[in-house]
Length: 236
Image (cartoon, rainbow, N blue to C red; front, side):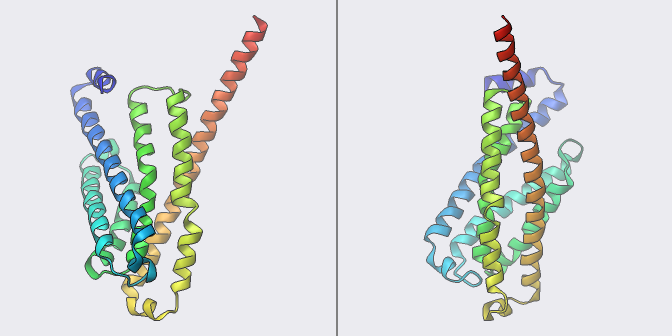
């Protein structure tokens, strides 16, 4: 956009290249999230084979969805490593590796298609996270209306697709324990599934706490500013 281009003109050459690269990556990330999230929702609602057998259901459509995500995660991981000083984050590296570790079993062996696809619900929160970065680069105050709306939406959507779904996810995980299908998975697939799920959800809880804290601070800030404005208006 014109506003974003104007901001880039004020930055040193190296930063211009970095921010231009990051802006394209954010747009790609948002596009990926919407495509993969849409596929994920469709599969959860309409793919009878996957929903009928959570461990061994036909993974054909799920494989396509996870293959797209795997390609994106690998490319994003490489970029994080290449630009580590600017965008390096050990939590993102752990997140990507944990997801790739689990998705290997879906793509190579066709196992756990339902659960692999279920994890992709989390992608619906990504566009709001990316939009927050754009607002930050453009210099929008945290108390601006646009930033406030995006922040609240990000908090709500993040909670719904990453936290609120945990009881449903883990109830289906636990209900599969001890079944014949679970035994057939083998130790490698079982451990990859459980370990990656726990790691990803611990990180989701950490991020949720951070996002909620940030959202609360901004709402309090706006509340104080409105109270101050109201008080000044009365004194006039």
